[in-house]
Length: 176
Ligand SMILES: [Zn+2]
Image (tube, rainbow, N blue to C red; front, top):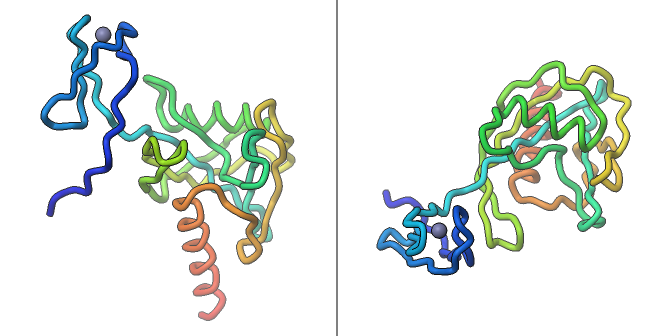
């Protein structure tokens, strides 16, 4: 089966030299810079998302300053050369002043971000913190624990999906 090809959005500048002399290559997901002769590939950006649950099964969500009405899992894009585990540790320290003591990859999903101009490859980790007493970092407006059946408005589709999955798993366990 052909992979689903997303609409291309050419980069305005070469990511190597800043030139605007970008030329689409036939594959349409790559752009060649006529000035420095480097190729920029339009790839999904890897990001890490932390699913942190407290003892009553409430999930920790954050809301950032530019999007005060929607919530998200703590986490963010990986830096170049950064491992997912290091990225989780850095993001959770920055966003909620928390120390990660355990993390396990549980799910991976594609999503859109920045008004669908970009695609993210989100790696979801079940994360254990040294302490569940958290406070919002510089770029976070608020962080709160929510019951899985009373979630606020969520910013990303993939977050809704994984939280729904968790809720269903919880219901399944209850029935047994
Ligand atoms: Zn260039």
